Image 1 (cartoon, rainbow over the protein chains, first blue to last red):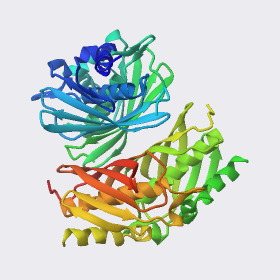
Image 2 (spheres, rainbow over the protein chains, first blue to last red):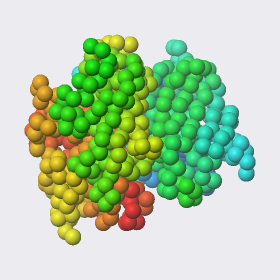
Image 3 (cartoon, rainbow over the protein chains, first blue to last red):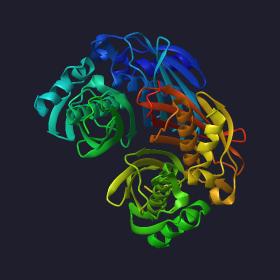
Length: 135
Length: 135
Length: 135
Length: 135
C-alpha cells in the first residue's frame, strides 16, 4: 500500500480516529503530519473555547502510531506516551508532526509536536512496539 | 460545593468530557474514582474491540485534573501527562483511580491507575498547576 | 545464584554502582530495596547539603534494573526512566523501593519510590528490556 | 555574571558536578552544550566499557538545570526528568545539548540530547522551576 493510503487508513479505520475527523497532510518514510480541525465536541474549556488535553494526547498517539506503522510496515501498539502542554490550544486546525527518532528491533521512539496556527502547543514522546522486526 | 457535586460537574461540563460519558464513582479529599463505559466510538481496534489508547489518556487526564481541582478548590490546568499501556483494554467499564501524591505550592503530582474489570490496563502520572495556592 | 547474592552483585560490580556505595536491604521476586548513605560527593546543594538529583535518578535506575534482572534472570538494559522530585532529599540514608508492575515478553515496567527517612522524596517509573523472554 | 562564567560555576560548584568532571562547551541565551569525558568510574558495563545510564541522566539534569538557570537568572530546581536511552554510550566524550522549549511563569520545559561522537545515545526532557519569575 502506498504510504499516503496507509496513513489515510490509519486515520479513518479505527472508530475513535474516524470520530476525531483527522486528515493526512504529509507522509515521508519517518515523518508524518496529521491535521485535526476544531469542533465544539473536542473542547475542554468553553470560555474561551480550547482543545481538550485528552484530544491533544489522542492526536499525538495516533500520529506516533501512524509514523511507526508506516516505518515498519506492521502493527505498532503504543507502549507509553509522555505529553507536555506548553500553551492553550486555540480552536483552529491543529497540525501534529510525528518523527521517528530511533527505529529499534523491538520498539520505536517517536517525537510529536503539535501546533495551533504557528503556536507550539504541545510536545510529546512515545514508544511504540515494533512487531514486524523492521530495523 | 460538595466534592461529589464538584466531581460530577468536572465530568460533565467540558464538552469532550460530556461526550465521553464519564460517571463519578467515589470522592475523597485526595482520591477520586471515575468510570467510563465502553461504546464502539471509543474503540481503537475492532477485531476484537478494544478501547483506544487516546481514550485511556483522556480518562487519566480528566481524573487527574478532577482530583487536583477538588484538592485545591481551584482550576488545575494539566502541565504534562505520562501514560504507560500495560495490557489491551477490553470493552467493559473502565475505572480510573486518581490519587494526589504531592500537593505543592505551584503544582500537584497525581498517579492514575486504570482497570478494566480486575485487569490493570494502564498507569499514568500527571502534573497539574496549583492556581489557587492551596498546599 | 540466590536473589540476595544477585542483588549484591548488581550493586557492586558496575564501577559507578560501586562508587555510589549502595547496599542491598531486601529482595523479593518482584521487589527490591536498596540503601544509599549520604556523603558529600553525592550532593547537589551544599547550604544545606542535599542529595543531587542525578544521584536520585541513578539510584532509581540501578534499583529498577536490579529488580528486573532478578525477575527475569537475565540482563535488562534500561529503555527509559521518568523521575519526579517531590521534596529536597536530606543527607541521610536514602531507601529506594523498586517494584515490577508488569513483566511483559519484551519489556518490564517498574515503579521506584525513594525515601529519605520517612519522607517520600522522589517517584520514578522505568522501562527495562526483557532479554531473556521470562514472562 | 557573564553566561559562560555562570555555566562554568554550575558545572563545578555542586560537589557531584565537580566529581563528574564536566566542561562548558557553548552558551547561548536558551541553549548550552556541556561535555563529559569518559573515565572508568563513570561506567555501567565493563565488557565493553559503556557509560552508566545514571551518568547520562545526571548529565541531562545538570545541562537542563544550567540552561534554565542562565535563561532565568535564578535557581531552577528540577521538577522532573524523562530520559530515553537510544543506543549504548561508548567511552568517548559525551556532549549534552540542552535547549529551552518553553520559558513559562512558573516552570521551564527543556529538551536535552546526548551524543557520543556522532551517535545520538539519549534524549531527555525536563521540567525546571522558575523561581525568579523571568518569562
